Image 1 (cartoon, rainbow, N blue to C red):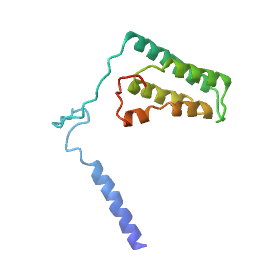
Image 2 (cartoon, rainbow, N blue to C red; image 1 turned 120 degrees about the vertical axis):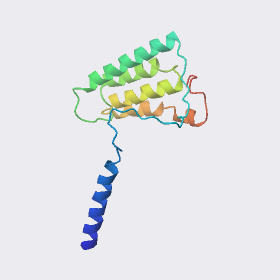
Image 3 (tube, rainbow, N blue to C red; image 1 turned 90 degrees about the vertical axis):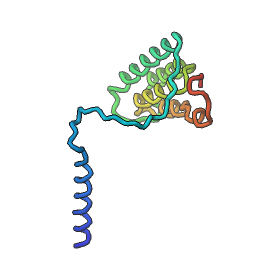
Length: 140
């Protein structure tokens, strides 16, 4: 029992000590680093891409509205959820990979109570394309 108490005290002290490493800086002071972060390639979006993103975001808002009154998980969801999920997949179909991946992430959060909707969005996740080295700015 003494060993357990000692370990617990040491663990608590370690957690407290880890939180005290502010070094006298205020939380609003900007941190400057000299190490460069890996460059993330930003994709140039066409006007058609911007329209598709706007449509996809409207679809996601509608999915959230549909799910708001629901309280229980069902495998099939509602017909409205299924229809809007299909519409979202069609509207976001030709977007660049990393843009589409972000929109899919947002859409999956909006259909958490519909098993088939979530599965359909999960199946469209472009992880394999990115892992295989495909151009993240090209269509998926």
